[in-house]
Amino acid sequence: MKNESVAILDIRSDEVTFLIGSKGVNGTFVFKGSHSERYEGFSIKEGFHDEDSLRRAISVSVTSVRQNYEGTVDEVYVGVPTGFVSLYTKGHTNSYPSKRKITAQDVDALYESGLNELLAQGKCIRRSHMYFTLGDNRKCFSVNDLYGVPTTLLKGAICYYFVSDAFCDLIDSILMSLSFTKVHLIPSTLAQSQYLMSEKKREGYAFLLDIGFLTTSISVVYGNGIVHEQSFDCGVGKIIAELMVRLDVDFYVAEEILSTTRVYRGVIPEDQMWTSEWANASFRLQDINEIIKSELDVLCEEVERFFNKHYREKNTTGLTVNPLSITGEGISYIKGATEHLSQQLCRLTEIVYPDLPYYDKPMYSARISLLDMALSDATKSGWLHRLFNNIGGKKK
Image 1 (cartoon, one colour):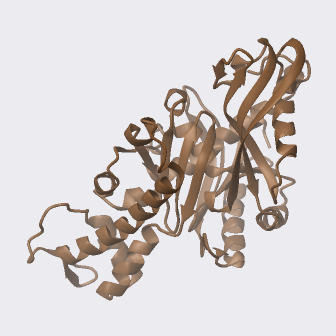
Image 2: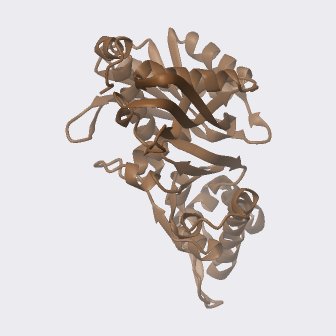
């Protein structure tokens, strides 16, 4: 593959996307090819519903892009959905007999010694930090602020991201069969949190709600790490399924209903109807609204249960006043959902998405965030960066 381009595979709960891109100007990207393919999806309780369906979708997406790409693609970065990631957080300290200037090797040693103390199953695919603390109790959110600073102590609030061997083996077998020689796994939520949220915003508690088609994840972000996160089987697909059952319609009519109506907070006249001419179907808007609101309330209950589990006893102001950032293809389907979630959860809400022409929609958040992190990783693996790392210099 050309040095300036990377390939990413974004695995969502009902769709996979294979994309090749490079950095553009002013924070933009240049796209060399992209293809998305639906598959049977996955659930948190059962995992992938049909591995052959996943294999076919990945193969079709990769083949479609390769056919139109003038270059070699043998390395790929894969976004791992939150439901397949196990998060471990740890406070860890390395002390030194006398003051020394912190180098990249010292930071790596802190990560490694902390990892060695963990008794976790699976493969550690990434590590990140919420923040570092020096011997004078100075807190640093950026690792670059550490380099060259003399201290007798380096402490980190560190996050480790693990994936099961079964997931790794499945993805490796699929991609190796497609002639990829290197496969890198990236926690999808971590990539989104760092791309969609500013560094300043992440210096306090930040919250990311990623609403997908079959699953939804909630993450608490702090610094460059994730404090807590959880996925649950709740998404747009569940709402569509309820519309199909309760209105006795097929998938396409239910999908049209959801995409062409909105959530109403006030009273809807009983005689106000939703009508589809092509499907020759008509239903009371009041009935539709109640079904959608009921399923959104289930999502709200899961989110509220998550916050009660981890933060019921904590009175940190940021936990209640900081907005809940919402993204994912699910939020694009349901007009008025953001306002409904805000009122039910008693929290400020905002929709976040890539600040890019055409891709400025929540449905593109995961793939663009993965591309951004993959390009950063590729830069760090370059020879110049490795040279600075080996001599203990400041990473750029």
